[in-house]
Image (cartoon, rainbow over all chains, first blue to last red; front, side, top):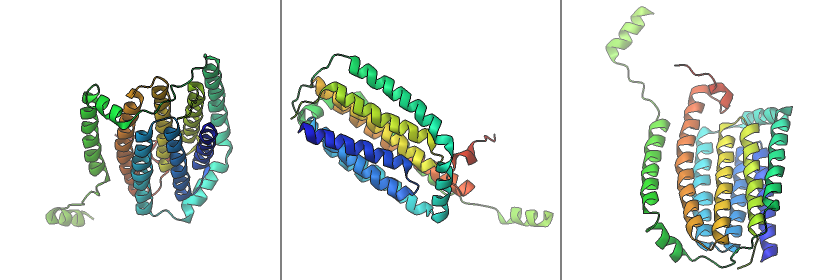
Length: 178
Length: 102
């Protein structure tokens, strides 16, 4: 099981690196699905089966499909891929990557320096999660419902194409001015 | 279930988070930046799950569910903004929208 965990972790890291280096958006989205599925495997192995199922259903099944829909609606062609290649070929990505890498090394050093704490190693059943969510964290559930509502309304308002309403008299006067 | 030390899990979450962070910094396409933000939030959720598994408490999983909800709302609004950007400037380049015109 430990070996399976490390294999899943390596696949997750590799496919995430592939996501941020692709020039074609569709390929990046497919690598993202692989990354999320391997993360779900990690969740399952460390004993969180409920969250593993949620990861597959909501992240890989809903959020990535939303990305795919938007990419389909935008209808980006070959010129977009060429543009991406042009942007990535410059040396602008080296210094930010180096700085983030140094921060990562520091983070890993700090985490490794802490005393090793083995995990409890027992699975947390969905029943426990549900009962805690609807008792201790009830206010959080309600707040996230409000957040989702705000998200729906905001997305609807922003993505709506503005109707170009011009009154015919106004149009005539504009034409007369020209 | 197998025993994975908390340190290993946090290191994996840290690596994934910094990969997403690099993605936000080096890409100029808005959809790639949103995707990188998703990667970062997923990594944060991973850290929560590992910590919850360490203390054998369901709280970490509940935090992950809240992060999931927030990610869904964020990506809906973000993609709507990306579509507006594309309709206005005919490109997904975020530099096209770097000027604020009041």
